[in-house]
Length: 282
Length: 354
Image (cartoon, rainbow over all chains, first blue to last red; front, side, top):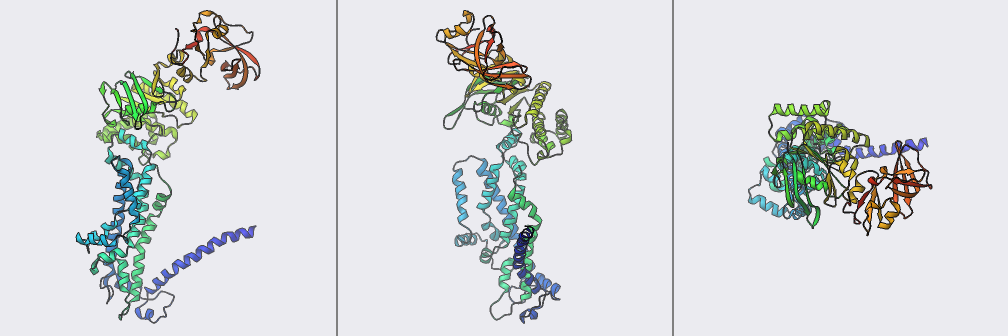
């Protein structure tokens, strides 16, 4: 019995360690790659330990950029990616919390109709409506602008539904108490509903930030200028398949840099994130 | 300070459900009015209409002489204590109390002074910095009352405020609510389904049933002289014994013919506490005598409830002081004096005689 129990405890650990190794090894390899010079990587015999070019490579990546392909320093791309990801996350939260508030707390004609329309947009992600969305963005001269990167992705049925579900768990008496206390709809929203939604907003922010950060298709279409491209697009553009030599050490630096912000966001907001998804603070 | 007056107030919900069917009464300034009735009788709806949280289908509601039918809840100058307290979970106790005043743009020093005064009255001063979730049920209850009293409203509305508390706390909070209302002298309307709460708190009791008022009056008067069999059964625990009888049956059970039971019969009621068990079978002059077979006996300490049935089949409850009572299966005789008998019309809607 004792033996079996210890094996029983060991197995999950083994499985988890294998999982971690599978996920972490490529990341490790990317890190190693980012610390060697181009020749070491190109000869196909990259050592499994970090090389001596760490500072040099990262400096070049962030402030100079590749010599041939993208021409833009990755620092600019990171700024672009940040603007896009934060714009999308904040925009989605702002719009969806307002729509959910309207749908849950106000009685207006076609209320449920609007709700279902919002619901149906779940079936229409960017990839499906890409041509009309591009056309609209182009007609509004949003190409190569931050607005063009952010606005078309901002509406979110998922977030609206999430807030709606949360609002429905807020007791009616709280609304009534607010009314008795002389708080109108806007006051109630600011003073009571927003503070109560804090954890939900944090959870959504994490999800939506990563969604925005990892966008590929839309920024690829909407940006043509080098100084407007995001870091994800940048990685793709750095890898050349034609005659030029891919500067792998810089690609690996970019990859490492692209991974950091999502990791940072998840780590700093993890506690709120978990609370937002598992408990409702009422 | 002001009275509350209702005239023919009705509430019809969508789908023609009539929740309140024409209710009129007036709560004089400073009085404690309790609306009591079984669940679904419309008492909470009525309270919410007075609060302005429900619209009034027809009729007139006035507070302090001013018709408030179309006035926003916050403009009616009333405060409400909710059943689940409805404290703002993210605000500490101080801010919970201050919130309504801030929305009314009360000057800051005055807010502070009023909040501290309310906290002192309710003895929640040490809790001012806490969040509602760090409070016990009784403390939350106090905060909810504090939120009502800081506003110094014309009237307090209570919607079953004690029903979430445990039995012991309920009794002590009941006493405190009464004391508080006395000392503030604010007109109060209190909704409950608990007849004991109703009896102990009210200056004025309104008994409601299926959207109508059954009887209005001081609690003891309602207890002594219930207007209908519904009131007779609802007020008082255990409920009044009600026996449907024809004139000649009454003559057989009740000594003295002058009791005045109509020919087509009546419902005769007698409270369990007015019945006593007679050991020698003697009958008080002009009283009722009921031969019982004891079915069950409940000893609760200071008193004992004897459940029995008369030969005709009606169940009867007798309250006996102390613990001395017959055992189950025994035959006993319960008697009551004539002035303790209540008579109602056969449909139970009217009190007869006296």
